[in-house]
Image (tube, rainbow, N blue to C red):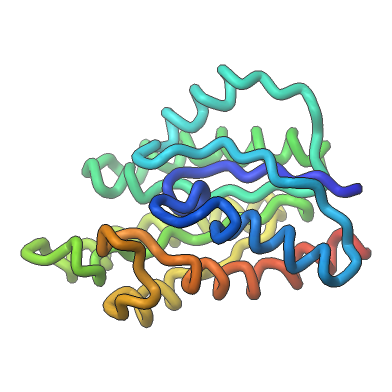
Length: 200
């Protein structure tokens, strides 16, 4: 049985959606249907976490196991709180190194998801949506460069959040977080990438 560790924030835990509908659980379900048996994901994620808060939580959990694959999605709260890109680069790099260690040093077994653009959602009404998009793009550019330099996998889901972020069906009740329907899109992109590595 394969094992899976998911590291992140609200977008990983699936704020306001049933656990079965968050992207880690949907990925596991899709892989199991393909005959790639994966245990329930271990999730270290809480709404509102920044890079340093995630790092502190990982340290606190002190998980000793390694995993077949690891996902990482972090940074939106750094942007939301107006933190610098340089600070993000430093702390994100440390988190990616941690993710690689949890994947037993196999960089190809680490999958990073891009940061969604919350600026398009109803929640962002009255805010500078153009500036939010620019910030998210800058964060994602840094995230992608560091991820690829470490030879890990990078998956862009930001485009989907921009396309669907104004459609109620793709949003949770708070008008900010994705619904299970949006997470399905992410899982449908991620599952084949994971399958390829696990079957390789």
